[in-house]
Amino acid sequence: MARNSTYNILMYSHDTYGLGHIRRSMAIASHLLGPRVNILILTGSPIAGRFPFPEQIDFVRIPGMIKRTNEEYLPLSIKINARHALDIRKNIITATVKTFQPQLFIVDKEPLGLKREVLPALQWLKRNRPGTRTILGLRDIMDDAETTRQEWRQKGVYEILEELYSEIWIYGNREMYDPVREYAIAEGVSRKVVFTGYIPRKVPSAENVQSIRKEHGLGEEDKLVVVTTGGGGDGYAVMDAYLRMLEISPGMPPFKSILITGPFMPKSERKNTYKRSRKLGVRMYHFYRQMEKIFAAADVVVSMGGYNTLSEILNQGTVSLVIPRETPRREQLIRAQTFKRRNLTDFIPWNELSPERLRDRLLGLLENPAPYREAIAGFRFTGIETMQQRILEFRDRKP
Image (tube, rainbow, N blue to C red; front, side):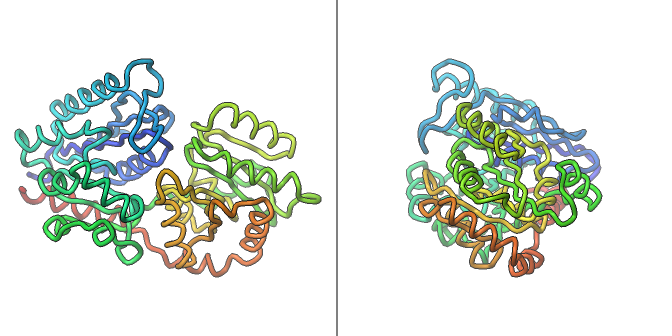
């Protein structure tokens, strides 16, 4: 394909829980923009419209679904049978592929899509547009090895990777965690694997950081701890522990706090968090549009350690404390352990979380951040650079 022709990139982000998938897709899309490049994102995120989309990027909203268990999903808003909602999603996805006719189709995380909803589109592309490159984009860690292998065998994922995907992009570093080995990806399929490295985020200017700190009443010597639970659907325990830490601490803590619950925290839990935060004089947001700015302004960020949140924190050079969930998937725990071994973060296991332990760890990080900052400074984000190079190669030669 000639380099000066229009190049259409379609991205699929199933978005059933949290903010990670849509934020990762948007970060990738914003960096892959170029002359005569059009990017369309298929997403089930109910808040996709809250994010600013630059010119040449747009999205198609498919009905949202909410995860009840690893296998059970229900419609988020419309009150219809789950099967009907999934049929609507599948038909929109397939129609978009046929109409948009992408040269590159990037599927995020789920090789078959939610409940196999992307499979018809992949099969149509293979039959009718064999020149389209189909890419499966995987975060660094999916789940523990045994669970992932079993799930992929049951769903026929290994066969799909071999038959319907051109490449598999892993958004991580092989030396930190190797999904090829952990998930028993066969040699023939492993030749399709490209380790891109972690995906960089925007780094705000020093002036922007100072503006954020001033906006929140912070002086040069003030310390700031930001607490975020991603989408917030299962983050109340972290917020509760943090607020209890503030409530039982004698006197004012030697740092200021900002809480970001996430838009999917249940209403009753969000109201409780707001009421307690207000009483303590702590500012709380349920959604913050530009997380990279608040992370850059912080001295320590407390999070649950999802791929996107941790990448965003590290990209700002900020020290972090992770409290990873361990169910229904163990990926956050494995990531916390992996990053802790390299001094890229500290973490508290879920079953060891208490106000006292939380306070001790935070004070330790605030008093001696140097070992973590040194490790973070040497951490490279090569994801976009690698992806851009792959796309240049795709455009320069036919499959």
